[in-house]
Length: 328
Image (cartoon, rainbow, N blue to C red; front, side, top):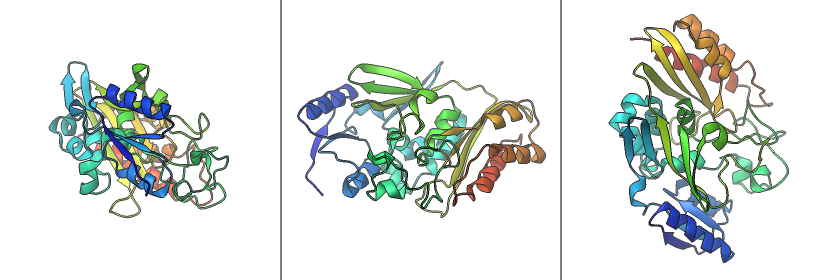
């Protein structure tokens, strides 16, 4: 592996300025929180970084704070810390469950919230040096190749799936993404932050060069809010979701007032299933409702030749998630 230059940042703005100086000198730059994915990409050659800007030295970026308007999650909080926080477990359960589902305990102790949300796809073509869309090429090799783990929603021209477990839970809670860059700070909602391949086939989010995800803001949730994150994997250790579903509902007794349902592992971005959300509003949670919602969840899916198995998985995950949020 090539020699790298490390820079310890004292703040997010300091990190951004260091990145600007490095790029002006003709060097490729990468921001590093936990570095669990970045190190692998550098080894594989899918990230050309010459300079690593270490964000772990940003002292105030690993906190969880709350006020009357909601909860702010520091971008550098470790996933293990996020999964164990009492306030997150109680009021933002799906986020805690999603964080707890990532990788192994060793990975969760190092991996950060922002890193999990902004990690690059794990498509084997991209990770193994193919000149695909994600690598700046003009082809998605999965379309006519091995596509068993690829998208059944929102694909084209690239058919990767977004690898984050936490991102769908954040979307389900209507999170706001706080970004720091050369032009200062800005805030985006999920629809602005995540981008489909049809918008930009090289990227999964709208971060511009030199920008980083610094924090995530969750608006206050009502007392009658319940949530869950359900995940189906091909094996029980260190793997990404074949299918996942983050579900947030407000209910009165066993009747759903409103719901947000966001899928993982099946689309290039966290995928909201608005047809299911509309269907659930005003209905009682029971086996029949959950089963119909599960079927409805895949009504607009467009599987490729080898990933049709994701349809019954998605239906089952949605059905299980809804039933788990029934009263009692």
